[in-house]
Amino acid sequence: MEPMEKEQTVTEQPKKRMLSGIQPSGDLHLGNYLGAIKNWADRVNEYECFYFMADMHTITVRQDPAELRKRSLNQLAQYIACGLDPEKNTLFLQSHVPAHAQLGWVLDCYTMFGELSRMTQFKDKSAKHKDNINAGLFTYPALMAADILLYQPDYVPVGEDQKQHVELTRDIAQRFNAIYGDVFKIPEPFIAKTGARIYGLSTPDAKMSKSVPEGCVFLMDDPDTIARKFKRAVTDSDTVNPVHFDRQNKPGVSNLMNIYATVTGETYEQIEAEFEGKGYGVFKPAVGEAVIEHLRPIREEAERLIKDKAYLHQVYEEGAQKASYVAGKTLRKVYKKIGFYQL
Image (cartoon, rainbow, N blue to C red):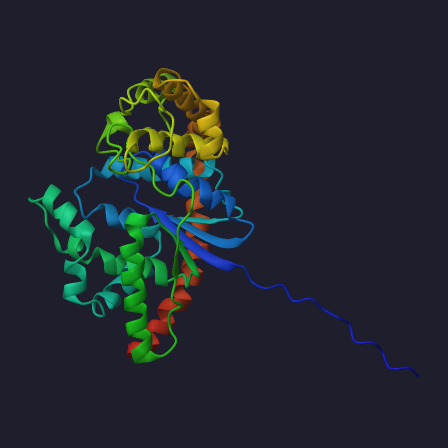
């Protein structure tokens, strides 16, 4: 009898995991979308993705409760409309997973005062909210570290301005691991090359922000509003070579070119050739029109989803269950390592 041949099996490598979140502190804008969410949707086939609404972080600044609840639903609708399929991505609300707060407290005890005092966002927010410099505003980077480390991600997609938080998270994780062994995976910041940082249309030296609404394009803005904002975008007085990428000397134009490149897929060289010999009176409306058409299906789908609250509630419920399962495993491991008696 001839020996049976061994069946060859191919073991699929597990996907690397990616996690990120945005505070539901206002409508999503073009900077959020082009700098982060658009890229998130493109990665679903390559990575196991967890994305959340960071509602616990929003309360370091006083919020209107009804508005916060409304934004938490509306933002989920916008996420889905931007291409984040709940069947392929784990979408959830931070406060629905108690492990965030539980691990946040543990990591508070492994984060140094000096580290927190050096965080630039604490300095910025303290200056803006001098009547409410609360402990949460100071210690929120430890909660942010918990947000990340709970899910043992390989990568955290961030803008350049958020790298400091990932670096602190890595420091906290390495400190904890040095004491208790291999508990946390050390995550890497993942920064997109195109669209990683979108600047304000009226403030091209600062990132796009809802705090400067006249220079901020919101995903739910109507076409006329978007067109008006781009026509008023800050450029310069160059008439010789107007549409030319030069971040240092032509920040406004370079920002518009970056936006145009991200929504059309064109290179800077192609854009320069397309608008050669044409002034800003032609270029700015063209960028506005490209953005309008790019955002149109997103706005229309978000408007439809916002009306279906039962569906959004179901997405949050299922997302919380998936997230809690993964987060719970990490939290139990941490609790055991630090000596908490567990039932």
